[in-house]
Image (cartoon, rainbow, N blue to C red; front, side, top):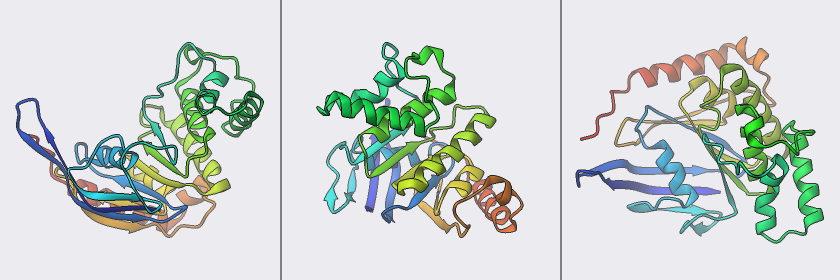
Length: 257
């Protein structure tokens, strides 16, 4: 579904110096797979996600999605970022319907699709609320519903729960897995949290500090569907968390010159 072949990315800094953010990244993601990218701050994991999304162009290498080279953003790849980016002047329903309206979907069909998704993300009854009237977790649910509305084949998620409190984050992780279980979209998920990566993923891609390279790829052999309470008592789950935490601790501090 996603093929990343020897991708590197170099930026020009404000001092006109060159900064190598990513170096020789190669990774394949299968259709329906949930893959998390984990690494220290500044390792380029978000940059890699933006390259797959077509928002940033790689300096070298290639990204192929469903047999087509990535040359820019497309409706096949749905981004969900930490910043909710909702339209404050639109209601919850209006935000979810926006992309469908832009694509010319008949209003009745767009309305039905949007209401179905709001039920899925547990926001039925909040259709006429505005973003300022919602909690952070509710805003992120709206953002997820808005992305799912146009049926992308791939979800690109950049720390979508990073700004939320621990309780809300846990609830949204559970909700995301519930949504994913229904149609098994391909998910590329960036996170700083080892526990989050292990809980959600089929594989965890561990990156080095800058310039970002792939240090290791850990296959998470845990049963699905996953229940948090059961996993917390699962020795294998605990071993994965400890192993990956040790790898994180071994990373040197990122320095940008």
